Image 1 (spheres, rainbow, N blue to C red):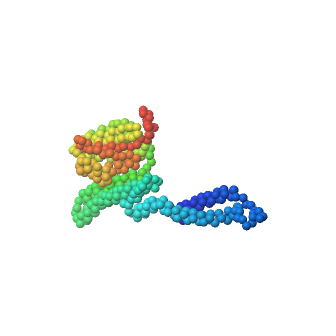
Image 2: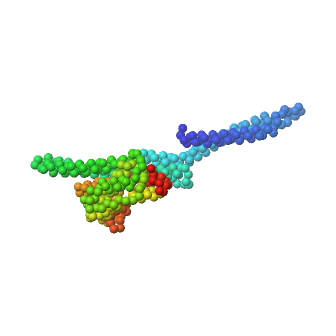
Image 3: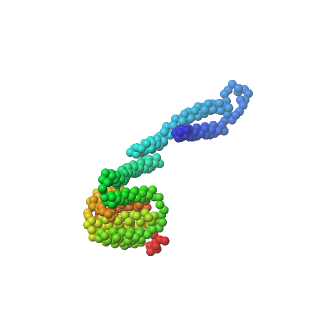
Length: 366
């Protein structure tokens, strides 16, 4: 049976049972005061009502009343069940459209706030997020296909030219193919890392962001010295609960971007960690050219590159650095904030939740 039929039977059953109890109570109450007496001799022609007469008069009326109550209970129950289930029908229709691929339809349930209204609002919020994620995935897939197709097309063109020109310098061809291959590998590895962060398929443990920042600065020191960029790392011990490899990649991406975006050279990069009661902050700030607000707002989008991005042997660039940082931060229940520096350059702040709601001041987390 459908849910409407079950509710109708329930409503009708309640009405009938209530009517039976009411009629039984009335009948029993009246019968208590009506004696079942025999008509005395000499009074046979007179009508003296007794209990039997009352039962013969009451039972047909009670049966008729029960039939009327059953009809009212059935009709009213069917109508009430339809009214009660109407919001679920709207939600079900929206779910069917979503299953068919249409994510633009919304339930938009009106009326006072109740359980059905809350369910509809949650369902609409889910559809909003699904539509946004679907659009983002489609845009990401298109960009990823373009980024991966470009090096492959270049390789194919170079091989076709080499095949048509037997006297072409083989060493030069190998060097160029190697550069193109390195770019394709970087794009693939970045996409895999991005997918891993999106799935949150990692284990968590206690990590100190300040130590990871020092390791990242030490690893990238040769690149910073080559570009004439000074890297300064300092700050508080910042204990978080997360994956060391992903958090290390997050900091490496931020420091690497800060170094290669210092145009002109002889700039500076500062890395700071701050510990607060409920959150931890990793701040990476670099000097560089002035960035308009619309450029800053799009830097965390996949395959978005700043206008002054350097392209050389030290930095091929695939446009996924800050996108990976944002996804890793979100996978750790954190957030990424990008702000243009007044004097030029970028200020990047990663907020991560503290592993303890109220850390004990002066007591390190073991």
